[in-house]
Image (cartoon, rainbow, N blue to C red; front, side, top):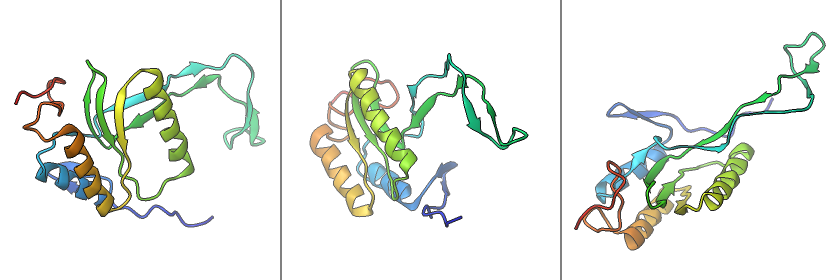
Length: 165
C-alpha cells in the first residue's frame, strides 16, 4: 500500500482539537479580526440514511468467501464544516473549509454540499483556503462582504440573528 498523502497533525488549543496548522491559523485570524464563527458544530446531512429496496452483493471480508449479500440499510452521508457563520432563519452566511489536500472522497462530499445548498435554497458563500495566504484572503473577502462583529451583516453565532450596530 502507498503512503497517505495527508500529513496534518491535530493541535489542541483551549480544549478545542483543531485538525491542522491551517485550521489553527484560520481560527487565530478570525479571532484577530473579531469575526464570529463556530468550529465544527454544523453537521449537514447531505443524503439521509435509507433502505435499498433491491438485493446487493458486495466484496466484504466478513463473508466466508469474501463476497456475499449485504444489508439493505445505507448510512447517511454528512458534512461537518470547519468554520461557519450561519443564520438558519434567513439561510444566509458563510462556510470555511480549510483543506491542504483534497481526497477523492472529499471532492464528492464538496459537490454534494453545493447541490444540497442549492436545493435547500441557502445563500451561502463557500471558502476553501489551502494556504495561510489564502486564509488571509478569505478573511479580507469576509470583511469586505460581511463586515466585522461591529457591522450589521455579520450573523451572531449565538442567536442566529444579525448583530446590532
